[in-house]
Amino acid sequence: MAIPRVFISSTCYDLKHIRENLKYFVRTIGYEPVLSDEGDVFYSPSSHTHDSCLKEVETCQIFILIIGGRQGGNYKDEISSITNNEYREAVRNNIPIFALVEASVHSDHHVFITNRKKNPDIAESIAYPSIDDIRIFGFVDEVRKNTKNNAIFPFRDFSDMESYLKKQWAGMMYDFIIQRSNEENSKITNKLLDDLALATKKSEELIKVLLKSSGNNETAEKTIEEVSNRVQAENFAKLVLSRFKLDKLWNTSIEDLESIPLNGTWIDFLEATPDFHIDEVDQGDGEVDQVLWGTASHGIQIGSYTNGEYRPANLSSFEDSFSSLKSVDADTRRNIYLTMVNGF
Image 1: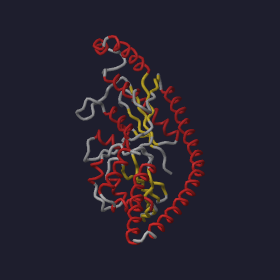
Image 2: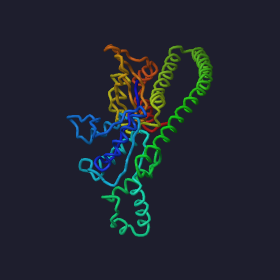
Image 3: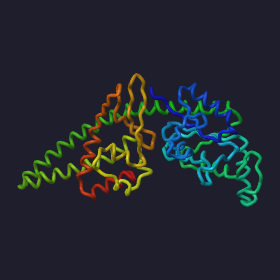
Image 4: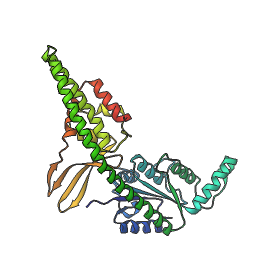
């Protein structure tokens, strides 16, 4: 059975005991903790260790950020720390973030903000006892000023953290249950939409009859086929964004899409973009699911292995719409790509 993976991000040595307690807490909940200092990150021989940490963030479904008094090592040669960049990677992938900051840092940050309003130069020259680098306050500002998922909770000890996370994760579970209830209600709406689609289909058939009766059957058939093919191709953008719970492709440009060859499958096409990747989930008993993940941490099972034998999933709607996408003219295809990049 697949379980949520929880990435715990912070400086390591000054928060070692906190990280250790969090690790056991996450396990008692039944989730899998991921800590870089515990060997839970795969360090690829072909990548920098910092890049490997960022890559591991993508595979997790929950992100815990702990802000303490140490800035930590810089990411490669940048001014930002590896913890800063792990957080940004979680934001980029729309992973739920639970941010906690040491109470002393939180208190000094308030003093810093007050001083900065009066005299910015003096505010940055003061030595604040809870931190070793003024950039920590800038990172706190970055987290709390995010447009969403910007809650930040001050803690004094691990019991504060445990209490906060229990409440937050219980709330997240409640939200999931309510969402399932809403999905059941949406099935009724979908039934009504299916009935509407049937009525639309009947209207289309009547239009076909009228076109054919106008005289030129060959022209009518060609027009009908072109319209049908274009509508089918446009459905590819709708399928991708809706099934992967995306407003748009956040990390892919129109140039990226136009540079991808169309001689493969729809899976090859999406995997070639920065917004999608394929992962395998071991379900036990020789069953391994192959999942195509989007940046909203929502995936679609595209196949499975049972004792080594691969069975592709039946996703004919994607296959049919992608086939139509290949055959439409370049202008129509570009408009479809623009929808994927910019959203509806």
